[in-house]
Image (cartoon, rainbow, N blue to C red):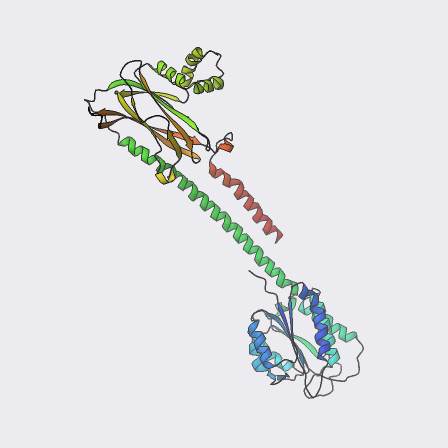
Length: 473
């Protein structure tokens, strides 16, 4: 909301027959208002040798910006003398009254108090007018003192009282030129200027009150914006949490649907009982790479775990250091680690096996929004064998692509092949849904907490700002 400065409009017009020293009045009021004009508290605009068209054009251009209209020149009960056609009070008052912010009409001429009723009837709240002829120099002095008092912070009533007091205490000068159309002797013993008020509230108006009202309006707008921001943030937070929950639900849906669609092994597939073990870290940081392992065999669980550790000594060393196991030799390291790994990230399960099997690690999220980068380091189809000591081994490299809790699916199938080697049947025998927590890598050590809690300090900060803005008002 831009600040529109109050416009003080001054119209001066002389008469060819009786020249007034209007340049003296114009210079006096301009100097009185100069400081406020430079501070952009008001805008000063003066029209010399004003025509009726000048007044109408200026009022149209600065509609609802004119707070004070000041006329200096010859006048009487019905007219303001202009350069060209004169302005009749009944028609000019209609134009002046259309200015909503208008506070004062100052008619600094002779015997024009009869025009007050016309200005009041059109909405002018206050008028300074004269009941008799006024001396040119006195009129200039009154205007100068009035506007100096007004720019000093006084109200309209106080400024008029100050100016009137100044003229009342000054020594009268020889009367030379009056601001009346038909000259006559000035009224003796009576102060000719009067402040005529239709709306008493205007008496307290000051120049600074416009800026203060603007500042209060800005403060109200800032409070409304801050409050609206709080509401919007709260709504966005709620929508974000709901959408996050919906996204997690949608992440689960494909895997759950696959689990429900799992096929039972064919009864004539010549399948044997076997064991399955897989290693899949339950927590993976984004921007890091991890290894996932799957082993299938007919041997017992401990032997199967030992095979995993022998194939991956880095996993064994990691758990040895983490759990501070005492054994240092490789043989004892494998044996000591087995029980620990049973309770850690390596999982054991029973499975039906055949000589040829296929295993896959699947990201069930839609292709356009994958949660993991997965690269198979071994062939998907492998020979298992049905002997007790034989086993088959699959390995993948994984890296989370985004933070959050996301699912992975371990899928295993037996493959029934014809004599020519073509696959005639692919029978799912195992499908496991596993969730992985993925914090951001630089904040891996930070404690886990709901992300929506980050909004709490932000809301508190906005509330403090709102209170400070309200207090500064």
